[in-house]
Image (cartoon, rainbow, N blue to C red; front, top):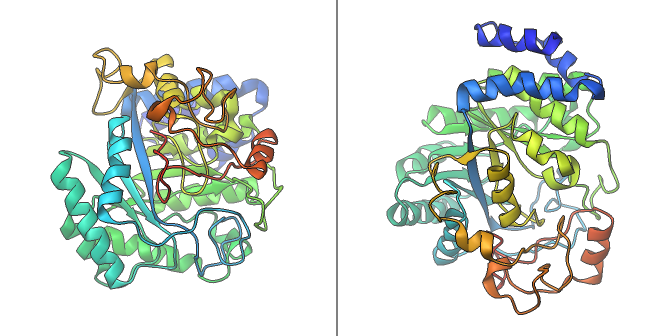
Length: 399
C-alpha cells in the first residue's frame, strides 16, 4: 500500500521525496512485485506499452588516459578488450545499420578518451550527416567525453540529437571511483550540451560501493540536471580493473534501483543499460514494466544478450517498440526470430557461435567465432565476456 500511495502522490503532481526513494530502495524483497506494480503505473502513464530501443557503436575502443576504476578502457586497466582508433564513416554506417534493422531508433556513438579534439568532432559530424541522410528519423546520441567550448554547438548543427555524459555516482562518492577529472567537470559538460540545445542523457552505475543514500543522492542530482534520458548501468566487474570480483548487486536490488528511478523521474526515459543480463538475470522482463528503454545487443567492450532474445523479451512481456508499434505483427522481425539463436553470454550454447541449431549458421546469430579459453571461463563464472564481434572486428554485429 505504501508504494501505491507514493505512486498516486506522484501521479497527482507531488514529486517523490528522498525519503520516498529510500523507502523504495530499501523495500523488503517480499514486497518487490508491489514496488514494480506501483512504479509500473507511472511508466504506463508516461510511456504506455512502448520500449525505446537504442544501439551502441563504439567508435574508438580502449587507450583512455582517464583512470575511472570501473572501466575496462581506462588507464591502468589490464582487461583484454578490443583496442582500435576511430572507425571510418563507412564502418559506422554498417554497424549502425545492423542496429536500426534490429529495431533501434537511436544510435549512440561512443568514443573512449578524456574528450574529443576538434578533428574528432569533424569525424562525428561526418558520421552524423551520413546517418541522417541514409536513415530517415534516426536519432543520434554522441558520447565523446568532456566537451570544450563550441563543440556541442558543432554537434547540434550537424544533426546530433542528444549528448551522453554520465555522472556515474553521487558527488559524495565520485572521488572514490576516479581521480583524473572531477564531478564538476562532468556537470559542466552536461551544461554545455544543454546550452547548445542537445538533449541531455546522463545516468549512473550501481554497484560501485555506494550507500543507499548515495544512490538516492545521484538520482536527485540527475533530476536537478534535467536529464531527459537516464541510463542505469550495473557494474560489470571486468578482470584487470580495480573493481574485478566486486559483486554488490542482486536481481532484486537492481529492480528496486530502476523502480526508484521511475518514482523520482516519472516522465523521463529510464534505460536499462550495461550489466542487465548478468545482474537482473531472469528479472529482465519485470524490469521493462518499470523502465522504458534498453540497449539492443552488445555493449562497448562486452557482449550482451543476443538480439533475438532482446526482441522476444519485449514482445513476450506485452510491449511494442517505439516507432515500430506494429513490427511484431507485420513480419518486420521474422528474419531475426527465425534465425538460429546467437550470442555467447547468457544463452545456452552447443556450438562455437552459441547457436543450438548447428554450425555454419551464417550472419543470423552474429557470426561463428569460438570463445577464447579466458572468455569461456568468464562465461562460466558469469563474468563479463569480452566483445569479439561488431565494431573493430570482421565478425557481424549482434543485432
